[in-house]
Length: 206
Image 1 (cartoon, one colour):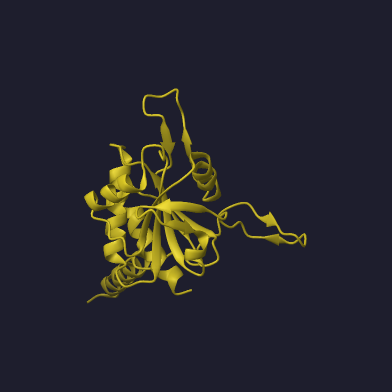
Image 2 (cartoon, helix red, strand yellow):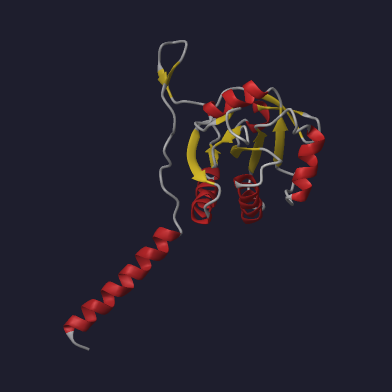
């Protein structure tokens, strides 16, 4: 083998190895998303998700206390949505299968709480094959839900000027053990959800 061919061969191997490791490695460290806040002592601190209280598919109260020191993934949807919502929920069921055995939660908020009661959410979860062992679908006061979305750095609102009056982001939100937003991922994009899976695994361990 000539020197040129030897160098080329080694270069190809290096590129292959680099690609393998790059594709299998989460972004480290993950960013902390959101504007810095000032605490009561006047110190600058990281943005954290606001306190909340909602009702889940089993008509049980769900608060932030359940997610204390836990990694979780949040999203916003509504059960009668025929466009991006089923795609997002399908991707979350895939996330759940991929992360089986990991210590984390999923929290899905309806943006149409007037229709999406606990029983409707329970029916939806069954229809979408969601395993409820670590997944809550929650409803509650509409304005509190929309305000909570902003806390997650995403959009959720009601817009009566359009045929389907509920507007929400397609993002899946990754939250760390300190209630900080660490990633936003397009829930309709397979590659971005693959990255979410890798980043969630990394965050659970750090």
